[in-house]
Image (cartoon, rainbow, N blue to C red; front, side):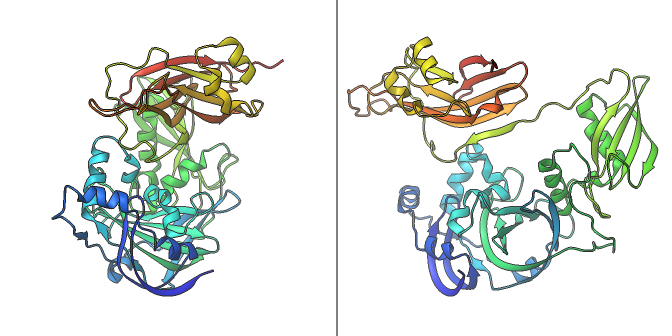
Length: 468
């Protein structure tokens, strides 16, 4: 599958341009194919008004810098567990990736306006452009290795992501061409294949016991927290008292409360890697925070399992937002130029095709035809209909999120600019997204809110699944 090759490429892949001499390297076969692809439209359009600015941001791989990154990283396995691996050595020289300054500046402007915020996350940058480098966004694993230097600083403008592709590992280096900081975008600057081994001991010589050690924890979250600590960030997660103080705020505790360790267990029925009970004196009332270790090893993090006591200030942490659906860049540049939306604009949460036609005549049957063959015993449809419009109008669903019993559907709309030529033939712009039916099949039902790109509420309804 993999071959060594020398070539010169120029590739725009969503957020990066591969440019310059490609060193001999073993990479996924798809990379060789994508290296020949050039998105002329996005490149040339950005240069129309910047003809004099045609420089590449110099961010070439540096052997000394690469040797300074942490060698251990926590990665997910195929069975849903986690393991620590050690990056031992590189298998081949890195592919050097040049970053176009013009593209980087335009992307930064988009982020500053609130668009494409995923560019602020190194892992998402690599994953969203996986295909351009021969990776598989759905099957491969993407783990943050480091975004800090030896001194522990997080504003170095440099990060690393380890990609497991099949049975091989690749180290992707990223840079921040517009200056370092949490509000600056990331761009890929090099890719190289590396050799790793499963970690058996950590730097302190302790055996590393990996895999879920606490039932009921959200390991999607704790894995990310452990990766952050491994990268030198959020080191307070290594101190159980600091964890209690920080995470205790989600339960209603505050900085005026006192925290006292009352019990330590190397292993318990709740947490086989360790448990610490911390008493919290909050406004004269005593509570107990049970702090647990999700992983084994001397550098494993701590987190809250639960809080016990009479009438805790908050019984559970505030619900977190879960992304059910999202597309990137599809609606880039869309704007609504009119003062109001069409009067026959409508939205619906469809749980039954025939029932929708019979009980709701706001959306014409011609717009709903694509839902005719949907298996509504397994899916529901979130439907957005702009209304009858001349040419040049559009509507699309960009993102669907869930927080507790509340679902938010972000809708993007566009209309012609004043003076644009449009066809007068009526069109019926619409879009829909299918969501698993069991997502909304919860006690109390789900409130579904459709909002546009300006945050304006377009529609709100409540869906409750009944069983007969």
